[in-house]
Image (cartoon, rainbow over all chains, first blue to last red; front, side):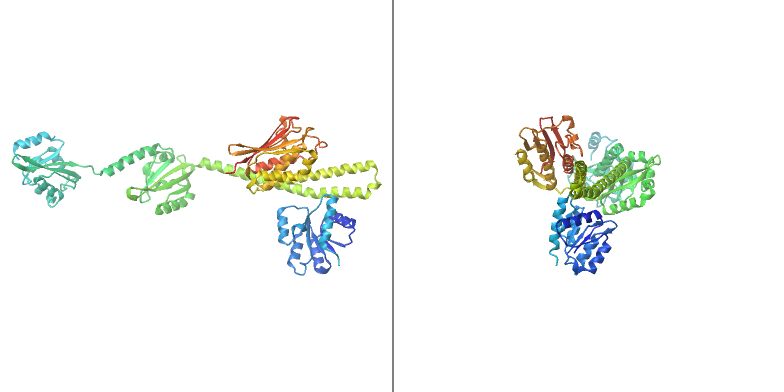
Length: 130
Length: 487
């Protein structure tokens, strides 16, 4: 299961469509607030194969999710990725401090081409579902 | 001492102005000039025949007494010590005396005493007095306010410029009188600074408000330095003051202006960044879903509807590229370049590598001349050269394109130029080419977002250089920028 922390329904739909188009059947769970995301994380950590976080959410802070993942040994094994429109250097630095390396830091693509590439890399991060 | 000899002595001296006395071998007075009478306060008739020791009880045992007996043995002596016991002020004056033997054919028959009153001061003191006189004359003519203080920290002199400024008299200002003119809010701080420096014998500098003759307080910059005399003796302080009110007012205005400008500029940068950043989001939605729509429903649409879609997509893509450009410019403007020594040639080679497909497709010949090592931000310099070189390729004419990268030293600057033999531009457009989003060619012919040269200019400005362009229609263009020569 991929947990997507994203408050823009457009982005959710795009990612869903492209996951589908890639012939992937990994279930996608969507949290539009950090509160809900943390709830999912704590309730069913074993199910999760990947957490994708948009760090800029309306009204809440996506970093909280990444901090929870990095700070809790039970959650630390779940791969995490950042998917954002921010290419700011300090955001990248912040992410690296929370264990998100460059290959897991994604800028939201402008065209569908970019999405296809993104999806294949996300699936690789998720690994084969058990 | 015979009368002829006395007469001779009298005739060789000016009896009115020279203090002369003639003594016999028993040191009794035989002659006494009028001037000597005036110097000692004892007239000739009263002293004649009297022994010198009786006239001046303190003579015995003194240097003068020794000098007199030496004279009787034939020696010539000068006596510096006070010769005469002082009873009256006149006698108290410091004198020096020249004592010499008086000889006749039969041998030494007495001694001659020539005395001279000296000024109260020593030669050094006289020199000091003269110097002081010169100092005051100079000080009064100086355009700055001057003061002097003695070893007791009290002021003992103010120049005329000071007195003119304060509108007070010297006696009002002397001592600590001047401090009455210091603004009450500055007084304590002033005194602390002054006394601290004074006890440490260190130079000091202080700013305070001093009341001018018209009652207005003016800001004064006061610099004081300790004075030391011969052999390092501390003599007090001397200080000079200038009225810095006008300068302070101007500085404050300039600071306020710079602060406002800086703030406005910063707000603009933030606005630019936020706008370009936030615009990204909706543009992405528009372009992505238009693409999805075309893919999803394209088969059901007629040609006209597909054309609408394609215009909409192109518009979205163009918005995206403009916003990208804005973001790039805004980053270049706010980023602080990290300068390091870079060989420009190496940067050019990286750029040519990046542009290799464009170079190959257009069969452009690139000529790279000798290029200097400069102090620059490597990433920004690369972006700058990339923009200039790709521009030169893009605006090629039908002739086989040639692009030349060269450098020329002018004084302490390098002028780096990228020239091409392309379509050029009208000379009157040479500054407009650097404007953001300015395009001189239809987009359909030469695609671009109008960012490249604006970014190039921003990068050059960031490095403290200048950039300019020269061109003529169909005669190619040359873009040049300056970089300081590395020391």
